[in-house]
Image 1 (cartoon, rainbow, N blue to C red):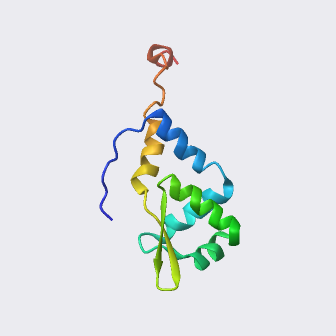
Image 2: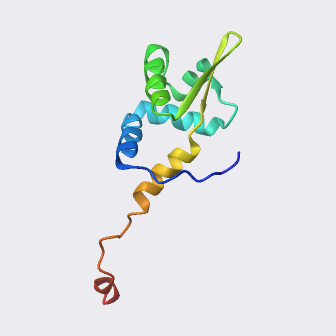
Image 3: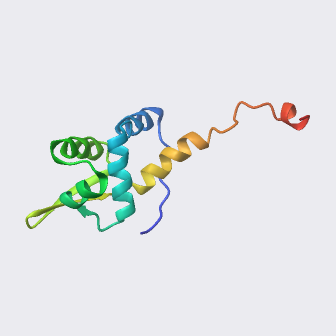
Length: 112
């Protein structure tokens, strides 16, 4: 997997992406797909590994897909799901961490 750095996120894009991850089940689905890597998983295997199945899984995949975090692709009779937004997830982390301690007064910390 080639690592490329995504441009800095706007507050609006970050909020939308964080909203898509604002469910324990969606976060579990995304984590399962991240662990599976580029090949992805069939919808059945994704359900078995994540513990989210049926119409609930379909609903969560739709939200994650609309947020651009995952993709679904038909292969024969199977639907293959994969995480595609590794850099977007990294950008979400950087969105928060880039602001770390920005408002701290360094002299207050220097005097312990």
